[in-house]
Image 1 (tube, helix red, strand yellow):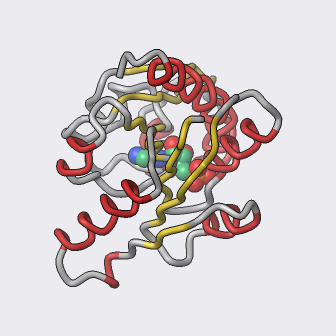
Image 2 (cartoon, rainbow, N blue to C red):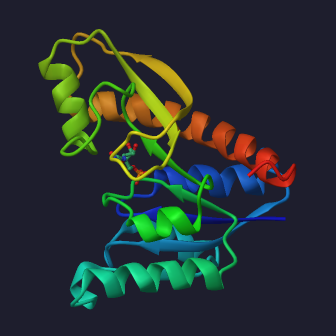
Length: 200
Ligand code: GAR
């Protein structure tokens, strides 16, 4: 049984995609053992609660020192027995201590075709606004390993999405999200196999 921890900050549709894939067997022999949210008001927390998934809220306001917050997240992940960590709309850079503790077992979903429109300042709707402002004809989604840079880890899966002439950031985000949900499930399965085979 693969123990997955999902880190979120917002709506949690990618979290929901993993929950649904586990429930209907597209991801086998896995369970979500913990959802960590950087915001106490993230709707993703309601999704976790609706499915009885334990949550840990690690809002910045609750910790006076960044190091304490990092240590608390790390401890929560360890106590939950996480084998795989999925950043699913987590709007923070993960601390090096956590990346080192779970080396090769942390993945992130990003709403563009990395290396385009990624790195500091490119997150959420900002990505889609930049894609539209540049007049791109296509965008997409990327799942990659998390390393100590910002969106710099090796790409696991990528998929293209057309940009339509009448798109705004919301319509493009919605189209990209559908693709994110699909490739995130594929990537989790790929990592599950690697971890199961003892390759990680
Ligand atoms: C998704 O589009 C995800 O790729 C993006 O935030 C959205 C979260 O949606 N993540 C980033 O921009 C990280 N750099 P969700 O909460 O509905 O899964």
